[in-house]
Length: 120
Image (cartoon, rainbow, N blue to C red; front, side):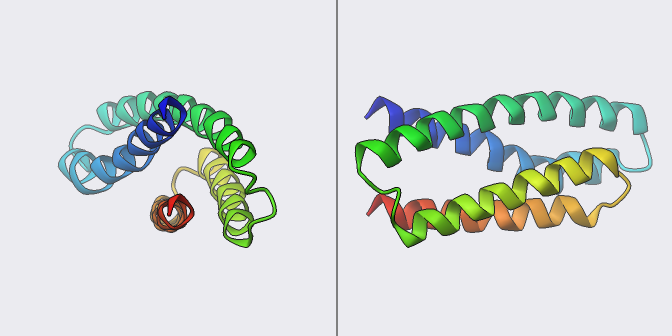
């Protein structure tokens, strides 16, 4: 139960943070405080990195515990996690490509959906 709790908590930090950035922080600071926006994005980046680490460890633990490694839904979810990782790296190299933020957020929402499907 604690592993699943940590997994959900890390998911909330990762996806919830994207939501707050996209719909509150960026619109409020865009064009006003570029340095402040960058500082928030960097801080969120570190929190996201920690959350991603927790998600990988707890996800692997649950996949092993519940013998789900051969599950097609899990394989799709893992493929999308890899895609999000690539998109994040691309975004880090090209921060001006704002569409990447939206792509990361949308793929993250699909990953959450698949996670809910796997939990039942």
